[in-house]
Image 1 (cartoon, rainbow, N blue to C red):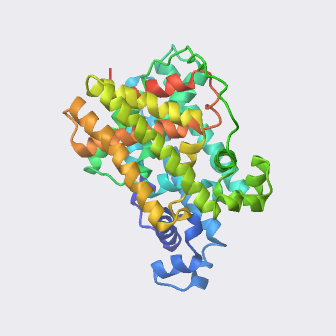
Image 2 (cartoon, rainbow, N blue to C red):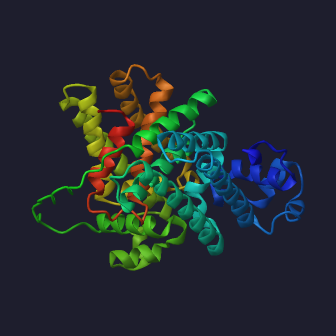
Image 3 (cartoon, rainbow, N blue to C red):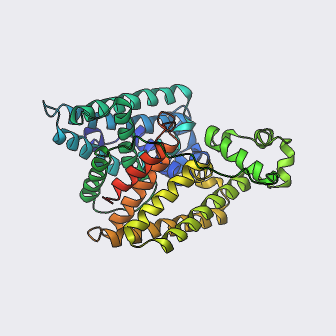
Length: 391
């Protein structure tokens, strides 16, 4: 795409440096002077190009949307008759853009909430138009799809491309784009289940939920709905039915509370993964079991979604390192099983594929346009199984 290869002007250079810093430290961990230092200029010089840090983020993200629009327009105008080849060309163009601009994909996923409301609306409007164009093209190829199902599959395809932002694993650029395009095509070919999971019958239990558990549950729900930085300890206390200062009897800070949520979610996943591995007959069965376990934890509470969407700088350094280690160990279990089940994938390709499957589940479970679908849990399992090519 022309915008990718043209010589960047000073404004674009500053935005590119800022994007790298935002991704490494999180939006709240970067100041104008940090951006200026990276560019070798003074803070006031940055203000000649941007009104503030928020404007820099908007410039980066709107530029990313523009590149996606260009890739879509180029693909959809290349053939007169809609068919599978046109879909493949669209997927390949977007995959190439995603590999080229991994930093933009990361910021779009995690930092967009820091934009001014008008910029959020603009990105939302243009993203929705992109999804509508994809869904229309998909329905031309798949006449069996209803509009809402086509939209779900297109959201999942977008998550395939956005998955490059959640890890740093890489392969040769051409192969990376080919792999992403192939994974997206698997997603678009999925036959969605039309029967919801039966409700789980649980006993009412005995006793009363502890105050600590009430606080953790309330905080997880608030962090998921409002974002970590928008929630105060007073908000958490009110949601748990106590005064804000009383929360400090159980947790020393909001960051400590978030750390406890993340550790609990991680422990649940690891324990369930061990149970699945020990009870499975082969690698494919184990992967299906891990998919079921992951979807169950993800859709059962807000903890997992919150722990994976929080800024890295939100956690204490020691705790952040431990959570990263746990996440790496968990992903490594999936990668090892997938490598054994699909020997044609090298370890890096297997890791990219696993991250893609997990990202689809993470994204769709917190996307308001689709996360209230009655069959969502089964749809997530089907999409993840398709990405892992489990048959």
